[in-house]
Length: 542
Picture 1 (tube, rainbow, N blue to C red):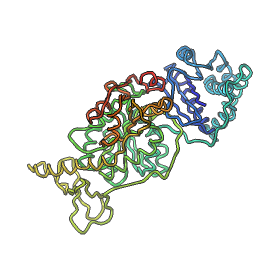
Picture 2 (cartoon, helix red, strand yellow):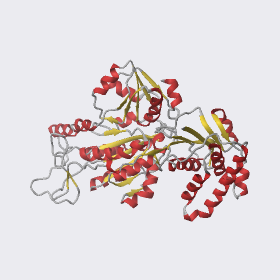
Picture 3 (tube, rainbow, N blue to C red):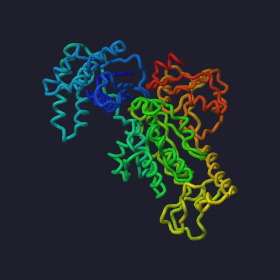
Picture 4 (cartoon, rainbow, N blue to C red):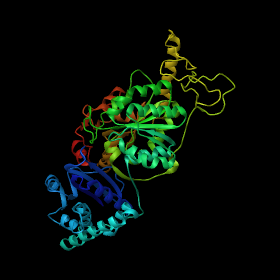
C-alpha cells in the first residue's frame, strides 16, 4: 500500500492538527509515514495551505507525488478549487456536511475532525484508531473536549458510511512506530549526545528545535535560553562550551549572518560549538516559511579569515537523530565550530524512524579535567595534529588567556608586537586540523550503478531515495560536506556517462563545489521557488 492524503484549508482551520493526528494514527498502526506541510507566514488566512500525509507498508523517505494525490480533504471552497483536479477521491462539504455535523455538537471549527470521520469511512479504517489518538492528544485534562470531538468523528463516519462504499480496507499493520519531525530528531539527538546548553532566538525554520528543547530539555538536565538576539545566542553557547559543557545554538540564514563574527571567535578561541543552520528562501526575510538550500556557500566559508570548521547535512529524518552526535564529537575532538546544515523541508517534515540509543557515542578529545601541576600549561600548544590540550576554568594549573586576538601558545596576545613567526606557527597549527577532520568525514552514500548518477545533499536525498527505488538510477547522496575527502566515489562519478546534481537553489551551489574539487558535473536540476522536489518532478526532469 502507498497512499497519499492532502488536507487543505486556511490557516486557523485545524489543518496542521488534522495532519499530525492522522500521521500519528497510521504510525501507531505500524505503517511507515511521511508528512509535509506547506503554509504561509501569517497566523490566519492562506486558504490553500496543506498538510500532505504519505502512508506505506514499506520504507519511504519523502512526501512522494506533488501533482497527484489519492485523497483530497478540502476544508473550504478555495482549497477544493485549487486541488480537486489532482485527487482520485475528494472529501469536502459537497460530499459530507462537515460544518453541519460539527455545529450540531457545538462548534463549526470541528469540521476538520468530521473530515477524519469521513476519511475513515472512505478507507475502511476503524474510527476507533482516530478516537484513541484524539484522547491521547487531549489527555485527562481535556476529557470532555475529547469526547465532543469523538462524537463529531463518529457522526461523520456514520454519515459517510451510509453514502459510499469504502475504496480500501486499512487495518493494523504491526507494532507502533516512532513518529517525529526533523527538528524533534535533531533536538532529541542533541540531548542523547550529551548537550547541556542550548541558546537560540526564534527564527523559522530553526524555531521548532528551540520549542522542543524548551519543553523537554530541562527534564534531561539541559539549560535552554532564549536571549535577546542571535549574536547573544551564539556568544552564550561559546561561553557555556568554554565553561565545559556541550553547547549549541540554532538559527536560519538571516540569524546566522549576525553570528558570523562570533563563529570566527569560536575558531580563534579553539572552543567547540555546534550551530544548527536551518535554510529558507532568501535573501533578507525572503521566504520565511518555505524551503531552500541556498546557504551552502555561506556555510562553507562563514565569517572572515581562514580557519578550520566542519559542515554536515543530515539526509533524511532518521539521520537527524544521529547527526548531532557526529557534530558534537568533531567539535570537541578538534576544538572547532561545526555547522549542521538543514532546511525547512527537513525540520518541519514528519517521518517514522528507528531509534537506536546505542548509536550515541560521546568523544570529548583532548580534555584535561585533573590538576595540571607537572609543567606549564600551554592552552594552544603546537602539536602535530594541530589539536592542543583543552581544560575548564577552575582546574588547578589550567589558567590561561582566551582572546580573539592572535596569540602564542600560552594565549598571550601578540598584536601589540610584530611577531610573524608566532602568527605563522599558530595559524598553521589551527589549519592542520582540517586534514584530521577530513579523515572522519564519510563518503557519500552510493546506491546502484549505472550510466547516470543523480547527486544530492542534505534533505534532497529524501525524494531522490524514493525516486531511485522506483527507477533504479545511480545515486550519490552527501551528508559530510566540509572538509570533503575525495576517494573512490569521485572516480565512480567521473567515469559515469552523466552526473546530474539535484538541489534546491538557483545557481547549483553544490554542483559548483563538486566541480571545484575536480568531480564531473554534466547537468543541474534546480528548484528555487520554495518547494522541495517531489518524485513525479524527478521522474520528469532527470
